[in-house]
Amino acid sequence: MTGSEPTLVLPSDLREAILERARTGDPREVCGVLGGSFDPDSSRVRSQYPADNVADHPRTRYRIDPEEQLAIFERLEDRGEEIVGFYHSHPRGPPRPSETDAEAATWPDRSYLIVSLSPLDIGSWRWRSGDSGTEDSSDRESTGSRTAGKFERETLVLE
Amino acid sequence: MRVTVDVKGEATHEIDTDELPGDSTSAAGQSASSDGTSNPESTYADLLTAVDLSPHEVSVLVDGRPVPEDQPVDADHVTVLRLIKGG
Image (cartoon, rainbow over the protein chains, first blue to last red):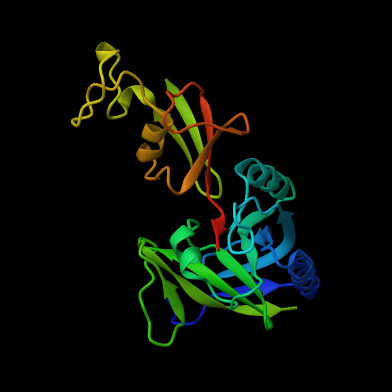
């Protein structure tokens, strides 16, 4: 490890599209998949794939149906992209992972982009599972869980 | 039976169900025991165990449709998706 934060490059038009989805989806959480170039420490988003939120309580939870998830992955792969990560909104919460997010995270090293609507803000985090080798560091903001792993904040680069 | 297990976003594994712990054709009809030697058939959950995954963190799909993890393996190609959910 170099000691620097991981990065996620996000084109401005995709950022605006995700923010708009979050606004129009309010008060429900919205969610989707990010496709592009994946690297455990430096990824680049090329596409965003909206998905339905099929959680039982969509104002405070999100879940992507596995069949839709697979269909999105196939579209993404057909375009030569990799799974960069995912996004969801917090209509009434901050732009950082909740305890529920940490307990439910399952994709090691992928980006979890979170949009807050009150106030409007956006942040991104990498899920580091217990075996991905990331240690706690005092200069990194992180959110852990009861499971073996934690979220590591990453730098969002807009272009 | 040879099964291809495609863990989306990660690796593809070739698993021989005859070699999975808990699989024993000679013990068909008996209930599972704690030593894992009397399961009549391998289940999708056994496949997940073989690739170090838990049913709590993934969905198993056959022909694009989710299948219960406790069902016997009845396909030679299985797709495994890590769940995307949170709050």
